[in-house]
Image 1: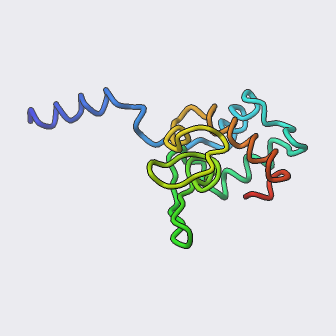
Image 2 (image 1 turned 30 degrees about the vertical axis):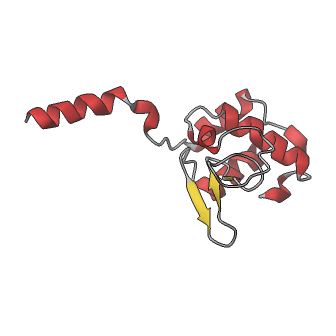
Length: 127
């Protein structure tokens, strides 16, 4: 019984490490607040749709790409080969961030990096 109580207490102390699944409307509101509506000519609906297909709105989604050893991170599945630094793996790290920053429930890093990806890749063609 004491172990269960201790586990429950620890679970309450680390809520930031839990994955968050945004709802469609909640994500749209957040992305609008962070300046993605109309960014590079893409509507808020475009960004929300892309997040749905890439991560199912999961802030801690990852996908390992066996063909090149890179990993996609976060709600937009931003790739470690080019856009963020994932430990010892070689990366261009164009967004100048650790990939772990893309796994936060705070989407600021995801949005700022997605803006860079969109600028450098002629829009959403990178996805």
